[in-house]
Length: 98
Image 1 (cartoon, rainbow, N blue to C red):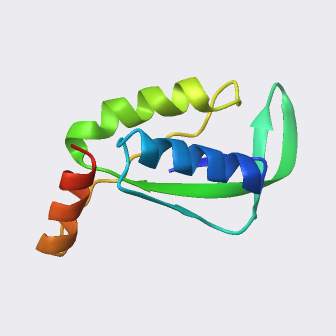
Image 2 (cartoon, rainbow, N blue to C red):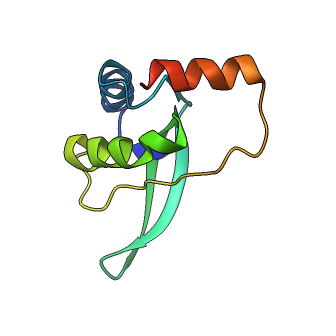
């Protein structure tokens, strides 16, 4: 998962990851309000969350893509392990990211 400051940037990150086959799918959520500390100040900003679906073996490639394509100095990149899932769906994710 990552966040960015516009719907257009979120779609570009999502589309680029799927085109590069480092994600099988990416879902963009409506704006969220983020409150965070940055450079000694408390900031509030609207951001769009992008959830990428990839195989564990492709995590490093997805992270490298995000670090290269993202315009934030320190982009949020969070991985959550999948403990269970539909066999067909998980096979599709693996196939699409191969």
